[in-house]
Image (spheres, rainbow, N blue to C red):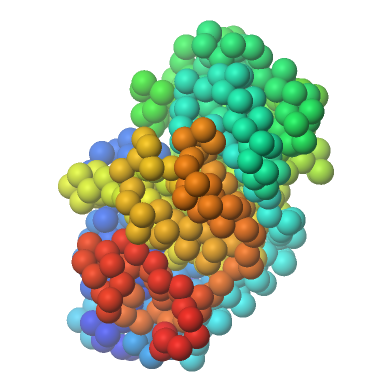
Length: 498
């Protein structure tokens, strides 16, 4: 364990953290606040690292890979590591009466760790992130513009719905590059070649038909997860991550209940993952969104006990990359962030956007802000602005429709502002037929690729996240701030002070 003491009163400091995986919270909070921790174990498993969960304590903040303490003038301290290939770096800042204790525990091989005082936390954190990306061979290809089926059709997606939206996209001249089929085409997790009864075809039929319309075909997979109803679970229980009792480890709660994970240290499981990649590439998919990847990192009993959790994850990810090929575009989601650098092209950097602003009951009463909502997506993605040096960031989809949505115009504009500030991928899931002229105009703006912006300040944010950028300001609170409406975004004209 690495340990430092900051001789400064904690009451005058903010802490900037980044959670374990895509959906885990990233925040900018007063150091003396309470770091939320879900009260239900399965929510910790599904949204955080159960091996190093949020503290749930006042004045105790846990972060992964990086950590910063920030004074009101923007100076402070930055903690970082030089490699994350096989190691989890677990940072903790603990407020004392008149000082702060900072620790960094490495789970995995020893790697360089730095804790440095800085006159400019923003610039130092960006520099360290760039160094880490370079050391791990970050892939940062040109961002793509993606239509995906999830946020409108969910698991009821059909082959006809995909093609209908692709045709309408061409009729309206919308600038999408990729049409991505999301969850729902398959029977069970693990049985990816078995079509669901409602899909109306097979996923292998889609790429050629999309190519006729001028689109690249994309496909969603959760390659490390296995549902207990699947043939994969029945036929190869020896490939599964196990609990201390020797039974296949069950965790999380989705698709109607808990699920299992492949043991990515098992040669048979790795060969299966590699072959899955080859299979879907053979179907014609060159854009793959792979989701729920944290499953490979769950604490458990592995086939090779000498392999740590971070390395086990990396082995599984490498197997999938080997299967689909170096030239495939991989978007990771629900994934350990830094441990994915160099193997993925893009990364979801926040929770799912949803056609509602906030699920307050889950966030406040259950202590879980990893669930889908516009507020959660902005809160976390904005606080990870520096990660564009690791991969193309994916802040998730624009919501431009007014039907099937609880978002108002101000909130839709805030999501559009997030896409502009974060840069990276541009995505939408709106049924094209639902968009009126106003919705189409907003969508065209949201598909305009931009360069990543950077914060103007980390002082006095409008919410518990990074909200003040050089191109505009977000208000993530529930009341107006300096003339900026609740849940709003105001682009800068060049005249305002940060």
